[in-house]
Length: 99
Image 1 (cartoon, rainbow, N blue to C red):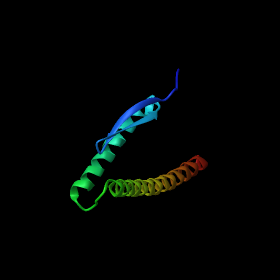
Image 2: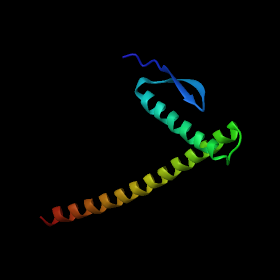
Image 3: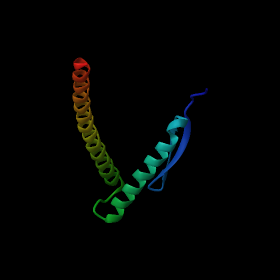
Image 4: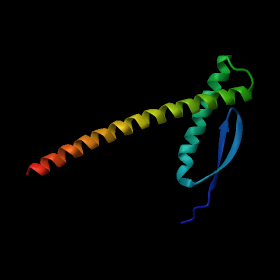
């Protein structure tokens, strides 16, 4: 199968960006661009951030913070799951040793 990246056109804040992307990642890339565009427009329309560069930086900072928050929660949940699996494994071993 041909794995050559395809070009996708994305519109962000009224500007077109052509990005090379593998076919299987295109849907996620398009959705991500739509979410970025939405966040940037909201920021711009709020009037609290002036200038397209500052809007882009603030949107990127907000998205990076959101990503870090999700990563931290994921790590916490993975630790909790690992602890639960260790306890369960220990209980199973105890039951098997008794029989």
